[in-house]
Amino acid sequence: MTVLFSPDPTETAFACFDAGDLSGAGEGFRAILTLEPGQPDALHGMACLARARGQSATAVALVGRALQKSAVSPDRRARMHITLGLALLEQGHTEAARAALHVSVLLQPADPRAHAALAEALAGLGRRGEARKALQKAAALLPDKSNVRTRIGELFLDDGLVMQAVEEFRQVVRDRPGDGAALANLGAALFAGNALDEAGDVLLQACELGAGTAETLNSLGLVQMARGELTAAYSTLGQALELRPSDARIANNLGTILMEIGRVEDAEALFKIIMAREAGEEAERARFNRATVLLGQGRFAEGWPCFESRRSLLGLISDSPQWDGSAGEEPVAVVGEQGLGDEVQFLRFLREAARLRPLRLRFRTAALAGLMPDLDQERILPAEGPVAAEISLLSLPDVLELEAPPCTEPYLAVEEVPEAGRIGLCWSGNPSYRFDRRRSVPTGCLEVLRQLSGIRFVALQRGDAPEWMERVSLETSEDLAREVGRCALVISVDTLVAHMAGALGRPLWLLNREGGDWRWKDVNWYRDVRQFRPPAGAGIAEGWSVVLEDVAAALSLRKR
Image (cartoon, rainbow, N blue to C red; front, side, top):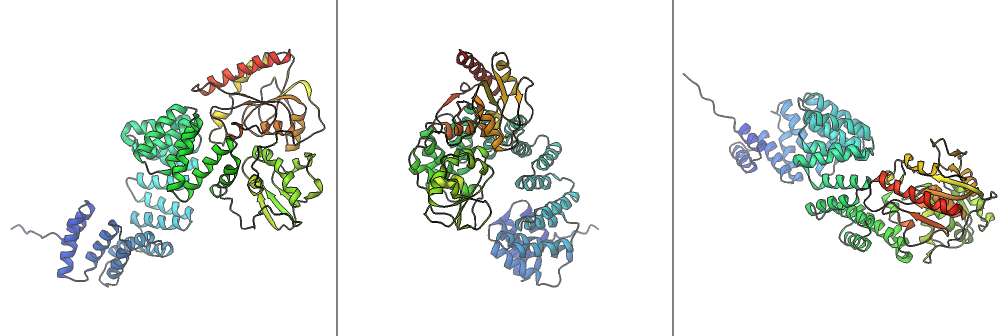
C-alpha cells in the first residue's frame, strides 16, 4: 500500500516565496497563522515578505515574535537571525544587526548566508577587512562563489585596492565566461587601475553580451574619454543618460565631455540643471564643473565661489577655523591641496593675503615664497606655531573676493639667467591622473626634436629621459625653479613645469591635450605662452606626432 504524505504547508509557502510568488507565499503563511496563531516559521515567513516589500520595521517586529518561541531548532533560529539582522541593517541599526548576524553564524557556522549577511553589517561599521574575511568564509561554503567574489571585489574597489578587486572579478569571469555583468565589473575595475585598453575591450564585450546598462556605458564612456576618443565618449555617455535620465553622476560625466569637445554652453546648462534638482555630492560636483567653465571664461565673480565646492568633493573640510579674509595681526596658516602645479599657479595670491595677515605656509612648495620679490617676507612666519585660522592656497581668490583677471607678470625670480639655445622639456605628468594618457606625450614622438642643431635640450622631469637630453638635479621645487630660470624656452605638457615657467616669466610652449584644462582657456595666467594642440579626433600617438613636428618646425624658425 502506498502511503501519501501531505506537503508541509510552511515549506510550500517558503517555496512560493523563493520562486518570487509573494502573493501565494502570503496566503500560505496567513493560513498557517489562522490555524496556529504565533507559529514561529510562519511569523518568520511573514517577516521575509515584509522585507521583500520594503517594510523592514514590520519584519523586525515579526521575526522578534518568532524568536520568542522556545520550540525553534538552532538551524531555524539561525535563519531567523539572518532575517532580523538584515532588517535591522535596512533600518540603519548597524551594530544591532551585527550582533544578530553574529548569533546566526554561531548557531549555523556552515550556512554561507549567515557569513555573507554578517559581512554587510561589518562593512556598514567600517570594519571592511573583517567583512572581506566573512565573505571569504561564505565563498568557501558555496559551490558557486561568483556572487560572493563579486561582493569581495566591490569592497576591494571601494577601498582603493584595485589590483585585488581586478583579481576577484577576473575569477568571476573565469567561472562565468559569458556573463556580461561579470565583464562589466571587471572593466570598471580595470579602468580604476588605469588599464585603459583592456578596460575598453572588456566593457565593449560586456555590452555585446547584453550588459549594456547605464552603469556599463558610463564606465565605457569614461574609458573612451581617458583614451582620447572624445566623439565616441560623447555618444556612449549620451546613451547612458538616455537609459537613466535621472542619474546625476552620468549627467556630470556627459557635461565634462561636452566641455572637452568645445560645447561649453551646453555643458554649463547641464551643470545648472543638476545643481537645481540634486543635493549632496553630485550637486557639488556639478557646481565644481561649472566653476571650471566660469573660470576658463574669466567670469571670476561667479567662478571662485563655485570653485570652493572642490573642498567637499576632496574631503578637505577642516575642523580649524577658516580665515574670512579679514585684516589683523593674528597669523593665518596657508595649507596646500591637489597638485604642485596648482600650488605654483596660486602662489601669486600670497602677496595680497600677506598684506592682510602674517602667514604660516604649510604646503609642499612653500619654499618658493622666498623667490617672490613682491612678497613682504617679514609677513611670512615659520610654518610651525599658533594661528588664528587657516585657508587653502586655492581658496585665496575666493576669500579675497578677487574678480579681476590675474596679473600675467612674473611673480617668481631666480638669479639664473636664460642661456641661449637651452630649452627645457617636460613631456609627461603624474601617471595616476585619470587623463594622463591624453596629457603625456609618448617619448618616441620627441625624436623629431633630436634632429635640430644648435639646441641643448634639458629634461625638466625626473625619471628616465632619452639619452640625447641633458639631465639635471630636480630634488626640490627650488632646483626646478633654478633650472627653468636657465632656459631660453620651456616646452611642457600641462603640469608643474609649465606653471613654473609662467611664474618665472620664461617663454612657454604648452603641449596641451585636446579639450584641455580650464587654466589654459580664454584667460591668460602668464604673459608669454604659445599653445600646441593635437588635431581634433586624432589618436594619441598620431596627434602628438603632429604636434611635435609643428614644434620642431617652429623651433627651426625661432633659431633664425
